[in-house]
Length: 160
Image 1 (cartoon, rainbow, N blue to C red):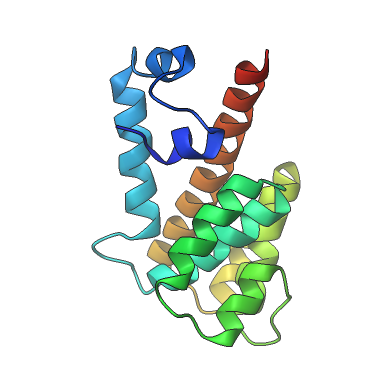
Image 2 (image 1 turned 90 degrees about the horizontal axis):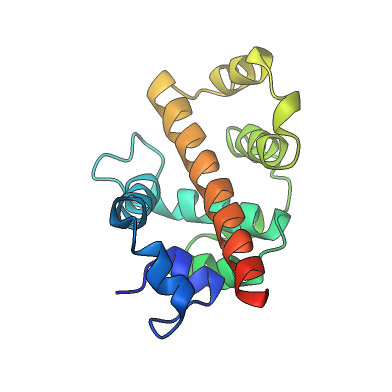
C-alpha cells in the first residue's frame, strides 16, 4: 500500500524503488505513523489539526515541494479553515499572537535550522505556548522537513 512519502515522490507499486522502500517496512510504517501522530494526534496539545496542516502547507511551500503542497492543501481544505489559517498556510505573516511567532519559528527552522537557538524557544513561551505545545510544534517541523527531503531524494533516485 502506498504511503504519503510514496505519493509525494510519485512512486507506484510497479516501480523497483517502491519495492526497495519495502525492504525496510519498519521505516515505511514508522514514517506513516509519525505523519499521523504529528498532523492529527489523539491529543493535539491545543494545536488543532487545521493549524498543524496550515503550518505543514507553509513548510511545503517554503521547500518548493509541489506534491506535498497539493497533499497538505487537500488535507487542510477538509477542515474548512478560517481565513487566518489559509493566509498562514500561504506564507503570510500573521499580525496576531501566537500565530505570528509560530510562523516565524516555523520559517526559521525550515529555512535556516542552524540559526535556531534557545532564545527562539523562549519567544514561543512568551507567545503563550506551553512546553508540550513547543515539543509538538518541533515534532511537526521536523517531520515535514524530513518528509520533504526523503521525497526529494526518492525523486532523484527515480530520475537516475
